[in-house]
Image (tube, rainbow, N blue to C red; front, side, top):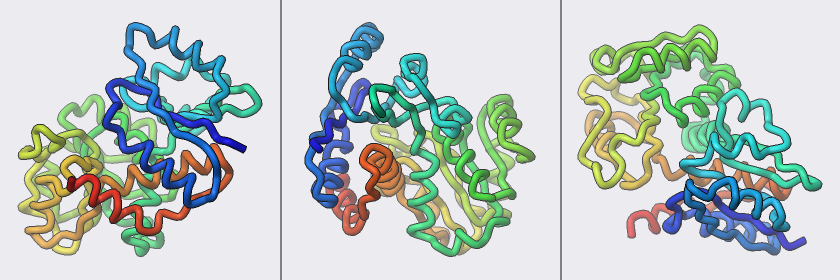
Amino acid sequence: MNFQLGLIGYPIKHSLSPWIHETFLEKTNLKGTYSIIEIEERSFAEEIEKLKKRDIDGFNVTVPYKEKIIPFLDEIDPQASAIGAVNTVQNKDGKWIGYNTDGIGYMRSLISKYPELKKDKNIAILLLGAGGAAKGILHALVENGYTNITIANRSLDRASELAKANGQIEILPLNDAEANLAAYSLIIQTTSVGMKPNADRSIISLTNVRKGAIVSDIVYQPLVTNFLKEASFHGARIHFGHTMLLYQAQYAFEIWTGIKPEIGTMDDELKTILEG
């Protein structure tokens, strides 16, 4: 079989997804291609209808279309439905099925780096942000049995809405979370704060972080964010955002092909690419 895969979004010309999935194809000895399908918002519906007529086996969906793609799908996976966003579409016997691999990909990347977290389900977790990425990660944490979770966000209404959808979860304003950082053993930064070109910014100060706590940032450009630099300076262990990119792609590839590719040295290879 010759897999026809791709990515839709805008703008996406500099996406690393082609390198990741072409490497997966090579590792698994499968034939296929992975294409960039850049679609402007004004012609989204028209271009999606054209894509439906093509013999494509699956595609990833990135901003700004993770919600906009949903009405064009024939089915949606329960997890993607709960999150309210789709980042992976499989063409199965002519039907488009939507999935969300972000949360599962994040959990795979985190457990790969810190396997001890698999056993400690009562670890105190602070989730910074309440947007789309936070939704996926929180859903995966809850699904994996983690119960001691606090959400801190600029908008408490948005945090409250996210908390209610996922059980009994505490919410805090960002300044309270900052003051009480020592209470948390795992801190996950899920917003775009600190991304290039605003790489000097951090969502909160980490002065009060507990030594030995795990601090994770989903931003991967720059690779070492200001947030992670400060975490490391204060004695925390860090988790890089580019690994989530790899593992969510791994799960998408698994959905399309039925084969789970090994990450192997791709972590270091991707790090080298991001460092230029």
